[in-house]
Image (tube, rainbow, N blue to C red):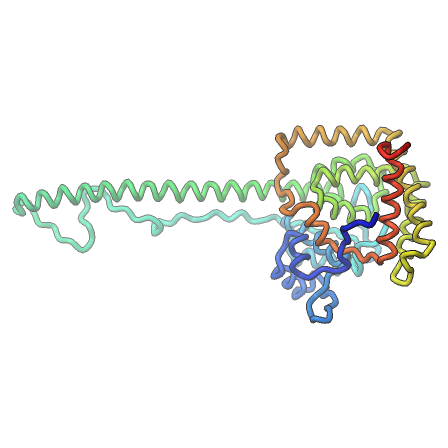
Length: 369
């Protein structure tokens, strides 16, 4: 069975922007100010973004969305000492994205600007006043003047009503804008508080995910784990990332499993472009991956983590009834998003993944005989 889905090895700026929830213009600006390094260009002289580029871009967007100034984000990436670690509950034990150090951002308080409703915006004519550009005719004007005065009064009354409607509409828009900005400020403040409590990068994940990670032993969460959760959250949402976090909780609690996971990861990485898809190593590593995932699933089940996952689904349904998406939820389907996230996998490594999946399907209850 060959999978019909193949992740791209690199993506163009449009796909990178779409995946990160940004724009090509914003990405070019990040390049200009030194926040995001310029990637290599293809034969068509267009930028090509790889996995590490997208990981860094996702963290930039998370920090910017939390209200952190771009200059502060850049300083965090470029001036932090390689030995500096963020004050986190789970200190990363691997390096930050290529060429960077662990981030300890300094949040800045967003400024809430209030739209100003000036008197020039709406002009009303007071009842009984003489409209500009006309002259008063006095009491000797006669019947015709009296009729004109009646018509003028009617016109003024209509103008007052219309102006009142205009004011009400403007005020309603102002109130709606303020409410939106207040909600955004609350969201940013909550993100900053999570960063202060849980650590810079852990706190940048959604509250649903950080709550799941609270049970992790201190110092057990690696930067690569955080990167994986960040990508999962972008593709499958907060619930998907919270369930995925179960994997890292199990690995943190079982050092032998973590060690075996590292060994298999290294074996998969060794299946580079120099290895043929029919090389015996491909099938061997696939079998090792399958055996490891089976052992990990057993640990998750026997340790009660699987029941905690069930509780996550129930909590999510309570928070988001009727299948409502959480605020700020993804705008792309999971399949579309996955197709925009680059992974530099060789044909041999992709074949290894396919073989491991085949073994998993053969092992599933529905296919046993």
